[in-house]
Length: 207
Image (cartoon, rainbow, N blue to C red; front, top):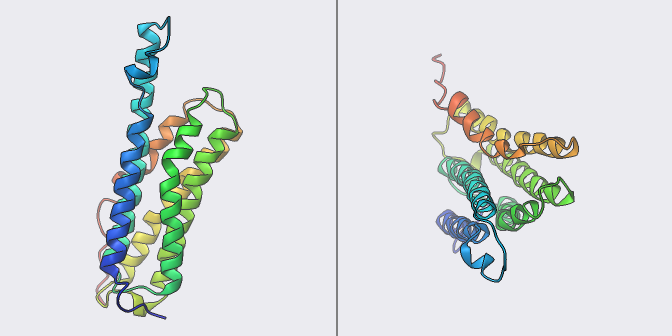
């Protein structure tokens, strides 16, 4: 059932923007600052610098991931005319997963050793990606939800883009299970893939 007033697509876009803004702001709390060492009697500058740089690197990586999800969600909204209750309920679940990102990423930084805390972030990331894929799969299977001018090739192109985040998250889960180092490089993998292989929209074939 298509949703009518007062829950409009504009309202859904606004709450999505608000959740992303709130979540991206929360990420900054994990950056190591001098006051966190104020009570320490002995602290080396090298240790402080290395931990601060590591926390900034993690902040940048997770921020890029959230920015990628924000762009994909709004590319999806741009191609939709309206939404129904099933889409709304699943989108609320996606927003819940988004809010959890700063907390799950903070848990993964508690120790340098790969522990169960690393799975928390990767599974959080994976579930958000799966919800994103399903949302667009569901929307493009319901013509009444889509913009009338949307081309099939454009809808398929966006679906392929949405697959990238959960695919990389699955690699991250396997990476943690294998206890491999330098998992942080996966922060940037989806962005690089999207830039290299999904930069240009497909051209609709002429009939």
